[in-house]
Image (cartoon, rainbow, N blue to C red; front, side):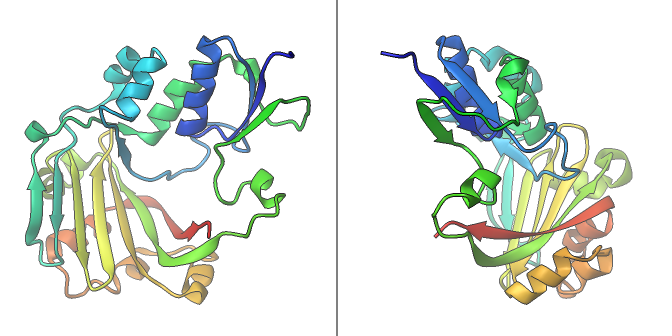
Length: 257
């Protein structure tokens, strides 16, 4: 019987972790990824919290837990869920959590560095006994299959960044307590997450029709575009948007039917 040879489609956290497990178990594999590097996209979303029975257990099985602890923020998992007036529904201090946070780019880089670089390619080739799909809904490989195309979820919004938050936006920094704040009301949200580099990732999402989603993604949105629907929200929540700098990314959530 020929040895197992795995084609791993996608070099996100799941795809890279699978590649690491294959590598340490001596199984031949090749990773296929469209992006040139882990930080190809300027804004990649907020942080990830890893849980003991899932993500943490997988990192331990991959022999990467010690390296993970050097990057993870064990004091960054506090969580506040509130309404548009900043009245809390729920608060969970970091003291009572055991789900450390890590930036997506840091986790992906850690996993990529743990596998041989010659196993990470973008060229089409054959001869595999198993193909594993760890790719996104819009991947080139998935679009070549007969599966239905992704459907728009009805949710769109903006992603932004507030650099050096402790120095430039201390009230917001203190409000987050180095963790996460999720504000929900009227079918909209403002979400803020502390990042490992001292910045705060801010998102403003809500229910939008597909025409809005397509038109907005084709433009370069401004801060006014992001705050126009939050006039009656608490000033400290709207300030999270107004204090952001650099690039604003408009995105939409799609799902496979």
